[in-house]
Length: 449
Image (cartoon, rainbow, N blue to C red; front, top):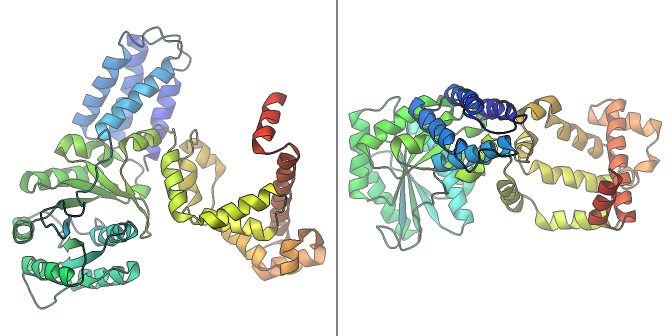
């Protein structure tokens, strides 16, 4: 996400690195580039204008004039202003038990046009709430498309959440009301309503949404927007805001959006915050929208906090601790190497993980040519080995390498490459252990520089 914007901002801000101080001329030139980068990222022109004006005012203030590191000062200012523009801090869903309009149950209405990812988001939200210890039920309130009802039932089975639907009734509000009763009977504490979508906004859609909210008052009304549509997503949000008082936006497909202008524009234009973002196709790929972390990502400064949270959620911590113990003890086989690869695969595409590391900008990722298929090949090679070969790779001679290559559908050179990577990692492990541990090894390396 934000690849184009990140790349343009990175190049623009680097131009200030050689300046002795911030002046009106070099700030004006840099901000012209920033403004163009924002507009090309499909940020609303009014939002771009306001952001650039705020950056200019602070950059030319007395607190940064004469700074010995003007580029760093500007990066900090841009980061602060982006964070403010995105909402300052994460906006929580209003779904605390007993705090909503229905004391025994929280209610969520999910709205959006067709193709925005609305039904899939309902499943992702249900899974997230289920992991938090809640008991959600999904309601299929689309009375026009049987396929949407079928899709919600499939998703509900996938995430292990009950689904209420009624193919006979043609009144969405009544279906939701009956779903609420069924949810109470099943002791569910959250009702997630998947409403009908349209190819475009019309009065019939709005009247139906208002009728649902009237008969079953909602604690949280979420508008799902396709981030890939850029400025059109913002226009849709504005139209919904004029008719319905929705509480927050959800941006889907943000992992595939190279521009990201919608995320930067929604709050400023509609007054409603972005609360959640979809960052992948899997049901687990739903994140809370953190403005400060997103601003850091846009500026290529990484997002270590989100990376840690994902690791804690998706990785097997017991297995990770076991591998770390074997690593520290100098016991590291190809089975352990395979275990590390499987742990990394749980984090999602490697390129997405690397983007969260500080200093890993888009240009570096392009040059690195990250290929997740490498993991598939490595697994295939290791799976083609015998148990003895995995545990004692030194016994793998020429004939064994040919057999492993044939069994894995790879070449001997690819098998050799894997074995070299394994030996290099084991050699580094031994150097670390002989130096007295990771901290001592790092100090030793730094001392040699």
